[in-house]
Length: 162
Image (cartoon, rainbow, N blue to C red; front, side):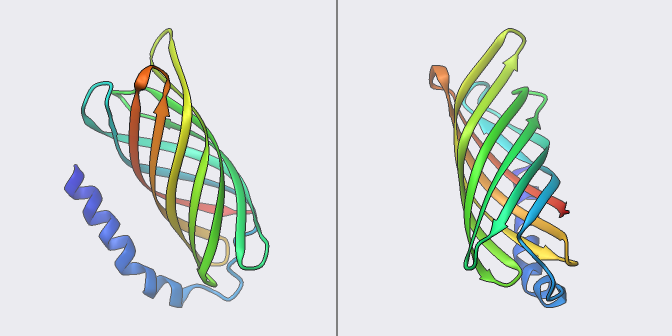
């Protein structure tokens, strides 16, 4: 599974220049957005890598050379259960259609019934705007929860802005 994610990440990075050339001049990093993602999660609860998937909703504002945003996200995995996060992000436009950003915020993990762990999340990612309102992203995240539980996620996502 790790090799599959590395291959997907390499394909994303390799396709970025071609997709950026096809992107329209109207691509924007401003507005409400929704998206879905898939990836790998690695935790120290069960000590395994597992498939993870999720959805997000957020809003971004392009303030010149920087992009400021916030999002709410729900991730799930068969092994670690549901993970809710509320994060903010700050990014810099590397080109008119390519954003490099960092994120930080609150997260809550429910690994099994009756146990909920609060924590914080930090991460970094890249986002490519295409087809005026579409986007694709690659993100690496680290979460630290109560009781000394840590988690890592690498996700690929797609979405649309409104």
